Image 1 (cartoon, rainbow, N blue to C red):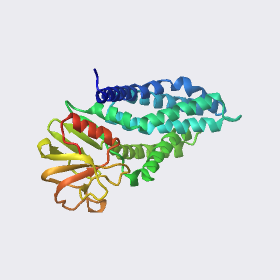
Image 2: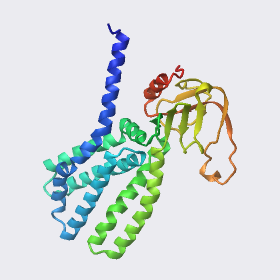
Image 3: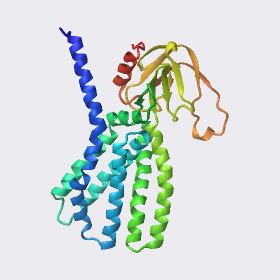
Image 4: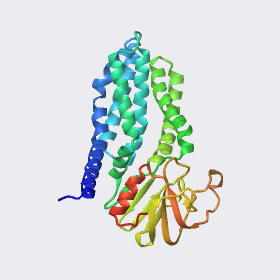
Length: 312
C-alpha cells in the first residue's frame, strides 16, 4: 500500500511531467495557429493601406511567423531568445491591428490579442525557459535558469527590445511608402541594432545553474567571468539563503528567493568587474559560500535531492 508521502510524491512527479510536456509543445501549437487566429485581424487592419504596404507587411508577417515557428519547434537557448523577442512583438502587432480597425475592435482582433497574449506569457514562463535551455544541454546535465537582474528588466531591457522592434518594422514600411532614403537608413540602423540587441538579450538566456555528475556549475557572465564549478565532495549544503547571509552575492540584484551553496572549504571565483574597470586586471576572489536567484528555487532543491546533495 502506498504511503501518504509516496502518494504526494507521485502526484508531484505527474504534475512535473505534465508541466514539462506543456512547456515543450504549447508554444509551438499556439504559434502554429497564428495564421488562423491572427491572420484575419492583420488582413482587416491592412485593407485600408496601399497594395505595396499590404504586400510588404504580408511578407514581413510570414517571415516573422516562420522564424517563430522554427524557434518553437527546435528548443535551444537561441530559440528561447528568439521566442522572447518575437512573442511580445506579436502582441504589439495584434494591438496595432485592433487599434487600426476603423469600426473598433472586432472578434478577429480580440482573438488575435488573446492568442498573442497567451504566447507572450508562455515564452516568458519559467517552464518554457527550463525546457528550451535544456534543449542545448550536454549529456547528464540539468540546467536551471536564473532570474534576470532587476536593474535590467526595469527599463533597459524594454528599451533595447523596443528599438529592435520599431526599427525592424519601420524600415521596410518606409520603403513601401516610397520614402526610399529614410527607409534604407532605418533598415541599415535596424540591422546594427538587431545584432547588438540580440547579443545583449541572449546573455539573459545563458544564465544557469547546472547540475552535472561532478557537482554544480554556476554560469552567469553578469557576475562571473568564468563559470564556477563546485565539486560534489566540496558542497556542504544547499538551501534558502537567510536574509543576514554573509555568502558572496551572485544574484545580480535579481528579485526572488535566493539559494545558497555552503562549501566545505574555500574556492576561488573571478567576478565580472564593473563596466568602467573591464580593462583592468581582475584578481580571483576566495569564497566559502555563494548565493544566487533561480527562477524556481523549488526545482533547484528537488534536483539537489535527486543528485544526493545535502539540502537544508
